[in-house]
Amino acid sequence: MPKIKCILESHHKIPIPILEILVGNLPQVSSTIKEVVEEVVEEPKEETDGWDKDWSWGAEEDSTSNRTELTTRSPSPNILSKDYLISSSGDGRTLVLAYRTKFIVVQVNSEGEYSAIGQNLGSSGELITSVLCLPLFVPSTRSTQNYVMCGYNTGWIRVFSESGVLLTEQQLETTPVLTIKMRTPPPTFKVPAHSQLKEDEDITILFEGNRVVSIDGQSLWLVLRVCDGQRESGIDASRMHTAFQYKKWELQHQDQVIQGPSPTHSWIPKFSNSNTTLTHALLDASTRYIAVGAYPMLSYYATADSSSSLSAASMATYVMSRVTSPVFSFAKSWWGSSANNTANQKRAGTPYVPNIPHPPTNIEPATPIPAVLVANDSFRQINQIYMGPPSTSSQRHTLAATSDALGRVILWDVLEGEMIRMWKGVRDATCGWVEVFEHELYQQPLPSGVPKVLQFLVIHSSKRGILKIFQMRHGKQVGAFHVGPGWQLISCAREPLGSSMVSIDRRKKAKGTERCEYGLLSNCLLVGPDGDVRKIKVTLKA
Image 1 (cartoon, one colour):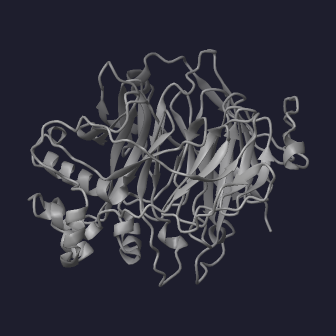
Image 2: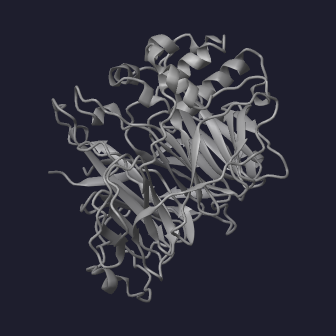
């Protein structure tokens, strides 16, 4: 079978003037791409921290296999590096660039270059600390519409249209927002025919101080559609009070939580290592988080909280009775009648309350959530966690990669609670995931059942300017590049918000339509300091 390799395919380019509007003057940067075969790159020697002994790790991964090198040269040492935040749409055609108080939205134009389509300057008293390009599915047009969700150092969450118009805002905490993560159902090609996939959606927001807010995805979808409908009707949506449903939890079992994504619903993993502690089993948990940080470095939180969200049908009916915008003309026919949901409407909070000029000033307290399992190493702090894409076999997130303060990247099986692989010498690492259909890669006929998807882990060491790609779970390295400083690895490809309210058949029909981001494979973009954007492509060696 032919061997696999990776290339950095030229994607599009962000014009220098746009970056200068965002961050100010940039140094002149020139890039030269050079392909090198069978070149050995020496790893820096590091003092052992006892990790291999404590966790029974074997020899380090071989990192001298076939590789391609991309060299970036710059006349200036002061290259912009991680000064601005980037978030991508599912297909990578829309990017949100945020720096301090402002953000710019760029989109690929007809000439194949990114051009600005919106911006917001913000206010001088607040800093953007996290940003998310938020795609929403619009059933009436079977297309995807992008929004911008920003988290601030004041604890405010604001959502804007892609043109930069404020739609809704709410202060959920008084501490800075650390991360914003979105979870939506798996793509339709990973779901077997005639299966009934039941999956919710949420936006997980982590605040400084170990507090996490989970926004109900269906509630947020309806709020944004209402706000956008009001905006299109000439009404200032920012002056309306739009209350989306959310729950707030406190992660008390760690000294510091740096990231805490919410995985798909699955059983609680079972660690068997002596460095792990299982406090109690909670197999029917309705809320789950994998939190990484320090003391302990990783914890699984879970609770069987019984309070249910407002159903999609009841929310659609409630909004339909109060909003005359054509945005919701499809609601009843799309989700069905909600005659049986009257009780739910009375019990649950309302997603939209008109004619209230200011958002609420009270901040809800957080509810402690128990840690059902912890993995601890007193010398280790995990800085980032990157959930892998859902697998085709279980439609769940089965893999995750973590990077720690000691320059290690660890691959985890999140269902079994096991560490699978480890890479050393990758300080300040960021990770991403790339998927490819096996039959397309090897030019084979389309299989009759669920197509097999190959997964690859991308590891980028910003400190060393090295990019490496490994096949999962136990495959070899298929690519290595030296990209130099100032580049950022950006993940893309996810189902749009609102997918859980749409049948699998309707999602499949919408897949081939223009401006729809359904059914995309996971991929990564590499954004350079000069605005050069490259896409990681998996192919076969000639």
